Image 1 (tube, rainbow, N blue to C red):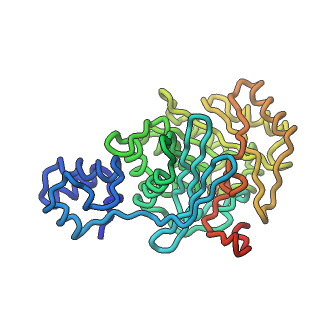
Image 2 (tube, rainbow, N blue to C red):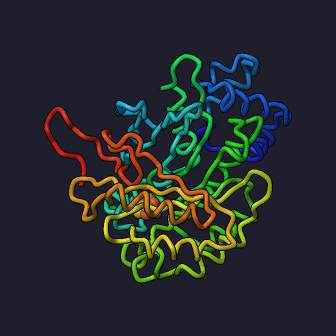
Length: 350
Ligand code: SF4
């Protein structure tokens, strides 16, 4: 059976053609799947009964099974979903002022092995399919309260989105399609650890925001905490960022996870300011959230504010991101996807 959540509009048009149906049927079905969040083919009441019966012979509408939802004291919700092969992924809904951001996972696990990231330390299983990417949006919608709506989507959960490039791009096309989920382009952000060819391709093929997890100001430190740096060192990465199109409201965000006594010195702040010269960007400073078994510590507040001030004095828009959902391990780098039997006292992290 094929899953109707596994098609972009153009792909669905092709399916409908192959069924010998008129193109407008694709628009109808697509609207039911994405705008009306239909959970079954039977619910597509303006599609003829005969076509619904034909669809049911070869198609289904399915999504990952949500196993667990945890809510933080700050309102952040983390949900754990099980995929058809038993893999598990986590997604996070983060309220912040008038924004409600959904953080989507792009892979089950991650192969990049960043040393400060729980996902990276847990290994890689596989890329997510389009319906598994879409499924996180549908699942999140099911958790919304009265009058709530998701305002922003960030691909910043488990996995390296640019290592699942084709499915991520198809997902982005549905997110930003007025006939699909209908988010504006400047509300969608793909975050990468620095895959240079993927950054260049994304800049040419998608009109969305880019976030880069930079986290170091020398190759020596970055090699140590992010092995991907050995393949795409800082000068190549920064060159790709200089070439990323910065038109309209689209922007580049530099994510900088601050690790105590690793990358949080005044010299690092000054070097960062020099490295980013010529790249229109804003900088998010993220004090590390230690997890059980992690080898790094959170920086002290004084070092964080000094670091931030150096950047601001150099003319950058730099903000310290308050960690959301740290109490439920939903903060940056804390997603792991393992079901935590907390009541049974089994520790699921680290
Ligand atoms: S920080 Fe991102 S890219 Fe690095 S290991 Fe974690 S999930 Fe993968």
